[in-house]
Amino acid sequence: MRIGIVCYPTFGGSGVVATELGMALANKGHEIHFITYRQPVRLALLSGKIHFHEVNVPEYPLFHYQPYELALSSKLVDMVKLHEIEVLHVHYAIPHAYAGYMAKKMLKTQGISIPMVTTLHGTDITLVGNHPFYKPAVTFSINKSDVVTSVSESLKEDTLRLFDIKKKIHVIPNFIDASKYDRTYTDCQRGMMANENERIITHVSNFRKVKRIPDVIKIFNGIQKEMPAKLIMVGEGPEREAAENLCDSLGIGEKVVFLGNSNEVDKILSFSDLFLLPSTIESFGLAALEAMINGVPVISSNSGGIPEVNKNGYSGFLSDVGNVEEMTENAIKILKDKTILDQYKKQAKEQAIKFDINNIVPIYEEIYEKAYAKAY
Ligand code: GMT
Image (cartoon, rainbow, N blue to C red; front, side):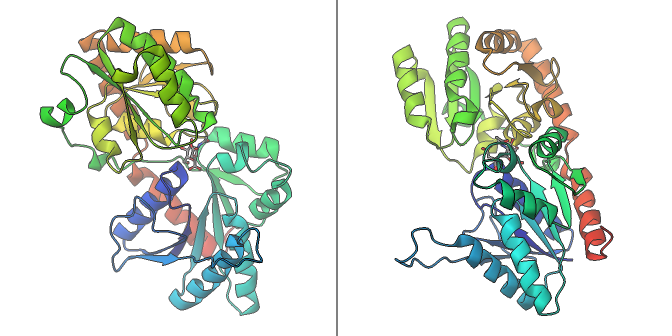
């Protein structure tokens, strides 16, 4: 099929999922058109099957806010016509579902019908979308989507609780390509991060409040009192500076490395021993899944969709949000003994393999085909 994908092109999970899905669909012979304001960060290679169309929003001094939705919906109309795109898949409701619906309506006046699949990712529902400023538009665009999918059962429940939704919501979990993760690291690469006797603890996020970055640092502080350890912090965001200050004030600055955004997350994870994700909420927790497939057990909170991914006592441990003490105890339980650590590493990988892309892509394909045939 010819599929148009709209997403955020950033390091955020929704953009990563959209990009990985597009690449997997292209591998299966579909023609994929990414339509967004920048080439997605995970999209390494364009090819005959993968195209990128940039949405430009020219600056105009009259506009206090530049109208991205308008530019996006116009671009969608043009690209659907030019490339005869058969289905639109928009990731993240704001403003993509809204812009997609406008594009659909414009195309309809030109005799073109195109179905729109909307995937809800989490913050578009739990953190931003239900703000009164956005809620009517988000409710409308979800209800006007031809198919609505959500990345976890928990997000589906949140959506139904927070919005007046008339559409059926299909839960399709996020995924990873398990076949890509058979790599091994060299001692030399690990040696650049930590000494041989040190455990490597990792956190990857966009450093926003919801990630509870101070908890990450407090948990690590507890761990490093018990054993030699390093904390690798990957990502950029508003909480980074305060986090660096907290490390200094705890006297652990030397043991914490802030790497900023990285395209080498898998390499970093491949030599990590433990991943920390104490978030206030995660609709899914793709970062945890990416850690697990690299054989890294996860200490996380038990909120949102995380329990659907991280299994307590198997791939790691889950605690109530903010229970730093218990998270620290559990982290030490996993890390202190090499045999126990190896067992958790193996289990983390086994749990992650359940989310292999090969189980998920056919579900999206079926949804596209049915939507195209107007079965929904
Ligand atoms: O976690 C973020 O802040 C980024 C956000 C996004 O929109 O990209 O991630 C959300 O979508 C991911 C992919 O579906 C999920 O794995 C994350 O759990 C979800 N984040 C939250 O719910 C906070």
